[in-house]
Length: 287
Image (cartoon, rainbow, N blue to C red; front, side, top):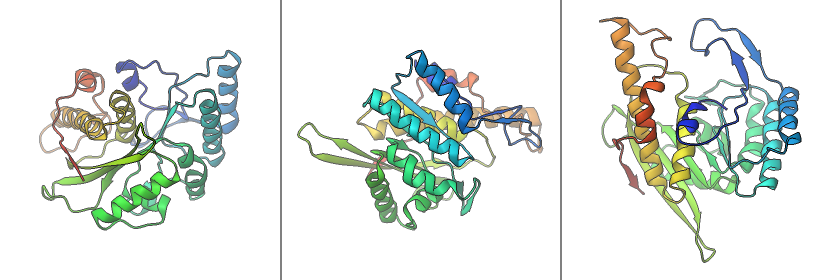
């Protein structure tokens, strides 16, 4: 799990297992370090189990490159859910973006057949949502159908974090969509669907997907049946953190110079107050 600072700030006690231990993130020219294997993950989990502290309310996972590791994650989540049927698994199914995969091809069926079915909340981008369902998105109606297909696979909450759909607010915005199935007291299900338009930023950040998934976990915890508010809070946090990061990066780089990867490190610590209680600057529309 990454960005464990965020849930800590929000009042969660976090046990973090790093799937990789790198000198720095891979947005830099060079990095060194180790990748955790499935066997090593299993050993760590066994240690937790032996002490009988494997009682969790949430599991959060993100980027991964190894099929056996991913299969092990799915097995562990299922075991944890047997211990606590109310456990919520938040999965960012990182496969790729803009038509190309940046993980090995053989991870796709593992996500589709093993991981997404045990997830409760997923945060794919458009490309990942299309890959998982086999359906293209070219209209808002397509996006709703894709989110419904993803619900059928398992998760009750789906947020498509970014899409190529035309924004109503103009070219400088991106369209994100969300859908949440809610079980009513009488046993029927209702679905809330939302659309939110977020400003584009002309810079490449590393870690925004991790931060987004962590924030969505936190805000759906506070608003479990109100996806609109949870998304407005989550996207507003993202906006504040990114704006603070951009301002800092340009200030450090100087006029007319492109910021370096170190200058574009997300200003998380400096954004603590915004993470805890963001001013709402993103309004969602209920579809």
